[in-house]
Amino acid sequence: MKPAPKDLRALARRDPVLGAAMRHVAKFPGFPASGHYRSHYDALTHAIVFQQLAGKAAATIHGRVCALTPGRHFPAAAELLALPDAKLRGAGLSRNKLRAVRDLSARIESGALLLARIARLSDERVIEQLIAVYGIGVWSAQMFLMFRLGRLDVMPIDDLGVREGAKRLDGLAERPTPKALLARAEAWRPLRSVATWILYRVADAEDWTEG
Image (cartoon, rainbow, N blue to C red):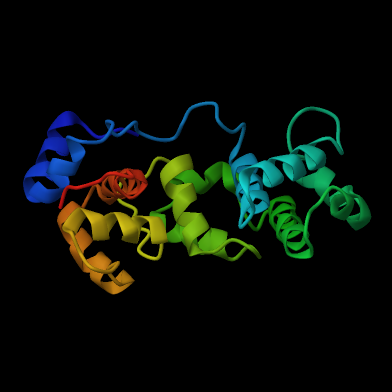
């Protein structure tokens, strides 16, 4: 989803400091990125495998798990549950990641987690459903909301990249606390996901001088 230009202009007027940053970074692209993942399940298993690993190592493990079943994609929930632990561990999954993908798959197969309907739920309900899965925390659920479901008003206050961006944006000596960032973000409603994306860009800019 991508907000209308008038909504982006209104966001910039509500917070001129953020508005100045918006003029210095690439335009908000809108989410989700079409075609990046085949399904919500693929997006979640990808997130689990890639958690706390360098990209190249995670991609290697992900590829090995995909190779355990026919086709190019991650094993479907039923396929994954049928695979022995030894094969999945041999592909490189840690015990915690193995437990996480099995728990996700079991919930899907039992009907406890209905990913086909999850886009109809509120942000709060989506987070509640996802964090019930072992290995999926609030941050991962928020990333799913933004980048997979395209929700526009998500504020991941515990994200260090977002807090670093807020520090640079406002010229602070230290990163704001999650509580302070939540209060700061009130001016960004109902487009806090847009502000989050901008803060990521500000945090990534090596020569950022605004603020």
